[in-house]
Length: 215
Image 1 (cartoon, one colour):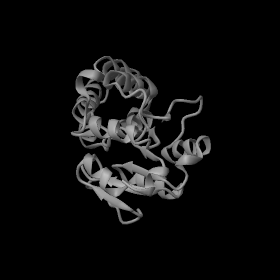
Image 2 (image 1 turned 135 degrees about the vertical axis):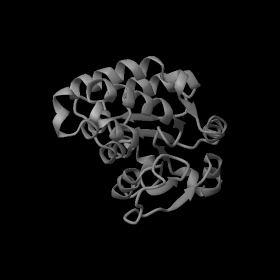
Image 3 (image 1 turned 30 degrees about the vertical axis):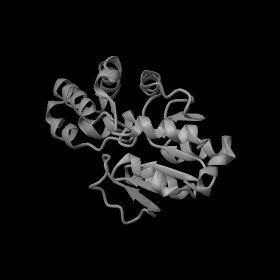
Image 4 (image 1 turned 120 degrees about the vertical axis):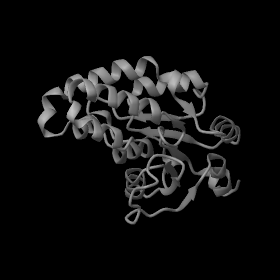
């Protein structure tokens, strides 16, 4: 670890720090079978990462938009109740976060996941003291995209300006680029098969522990 430690690192959440893929897909598929069975194949292949309402809109398609609120409410009810049972940190995340914290690395989270399950998981994992800022899509009255979440973190704490962002999807990379952060791609996450040609990737990691080698 070197001089880069004076700069903060912002993390995406799902697909970067924690793996909740199986539970999310199962919930998407169960709800779609219930209210829009013709769209089940879309639920099985949707990219995890965008805000819930955006994802639900894409799964339902034009013909089932009248079921959007029902889909979102069912997901919140089904997912949040069991989120701690079906979500695990990726290997080495807990130990590395603890070590970074002890080395005074400034850390924050910017995620399209809703605030309730994120805070529930952070409390459950005992990560409360690690992050100076946790920005979720619904923290404020108006929903924000990933670019706006990162921008708000930087404006709130100058230590993150020109720092790093670790994420797993193309949208993460573009959002980091727009905020002039060095983007680190988490290749173990959900977006490995996306087209990355338009993203300026500063570095990439195949396992979370490799993040220490970049500093």
